[in-house]
Length: 331
Image (cartoon, helix red, strand yellow):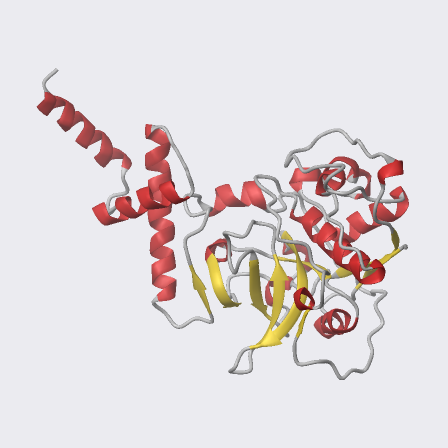
């Protein structure tokens, strides 16, 4: 077959698969992004991912051209539609985490203007990566218990998310389909312990339970739920006691978050809509006075602010105050 014919076939194939307005520089940016994240696709997958990347890049650029409290950027999720992202990284099983009356008892204050448990010694473990598994609830759980345990004992131990995925299903958790930190703390309490990351390493998929009681490294005396929508009580807990687990609703724009104080008009503020669990490790305020939470995520350090994000405080943003909790350690 003549080279000219081959070129014509290849060109037509490309035009069929490209989005109608994909520009050469956008495909060049996509190839650069592929190289950065070591992504390789077959031909059909390539054009599907290019289409998603182009749409995401344009959304990012349009957002950053406006006047917003946070900026967006490319990351490891930039070749995915939100529906694909939601199925792989968020809680897909229905969650209802409301606690109409919590067990946390607040003090009257006053509280420091800012708190960051990462600066208080060896209290917070490094950011982890949940991979393609809706196991954020396990990372919120371990992150909180790791810090609570370190505050109580002086020893920071990385704990097992995989044990929670495999073993905590009797407490209304669903492995890679989702769960809640408060229910995971209940499991650890009644199971008499959680093993270390080293002894029960992360696989990122559902497996059979292999808990070994003799290797339990952290224990829960009781679970403290913060009354739903009482964000001031969350401030009290983080200021006086320890980091706090919470859940909120992630919408499409959040997966592009890069830095700044995240706010949204797209998300809901109710307990039945939460789909992602994270860890509040502190709080502060912008120079313009906007208060925010400092939050540890579980999408690796390439996402956001080295794996962290800031979200506006005081407005129950995206339902973040609907279901906050923390454990009391048994030491």
